[in-house]
Length: 216
Image (cartoon, rainbow, N blue to C red; front, side):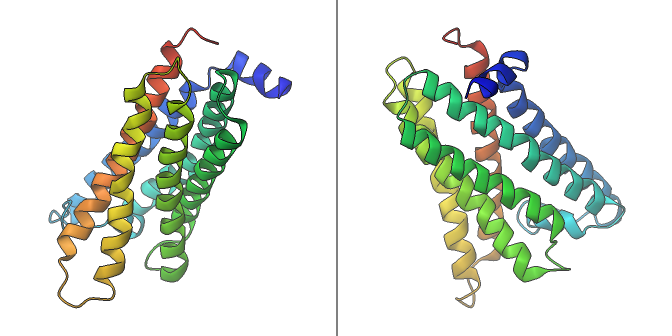
């Protein structure tokens, strides 16, 4: 752990959260712009996020590279957040489980960028499930870890509990969509976008809090 602490002593771990989410948001924005130059019908009710991974006009390249880079960079942020909470007195086992959840989300993101929905549909669905399940568990377990640390505001820990259900809803809606004829596809797609933005917002807020914290 000493080597880990020295590493984050040289490079503030909060920056990994900002860089990871920044690359992902910028990649999605550029990919959507490129996509819409060919197909202007793209919207948050008819297109899954993963549609960008097979999109036209090089939108696929931009999206897939950004997702892979995001998964790699956010791994360092989850690791930093685990260590940060441990140094704040957080439960050792809970923080490790939290990191493992984030690691699963990172692996899922990397695999999503490698296995696209058109070229490898089964592997892509598995990868996306890893990403969303990992994010769901990370928000919950990091939230629990933070909740029992008196110095951390309760509103910060409860934020994860408030946002995590969106990932769960998307997974449930996607399952229903594929097993129940007539289920509204638009609701499923929009819920995925909501879950994505919720998870991104959580990462940014965690980064802001740890950056401003003077407890280290």
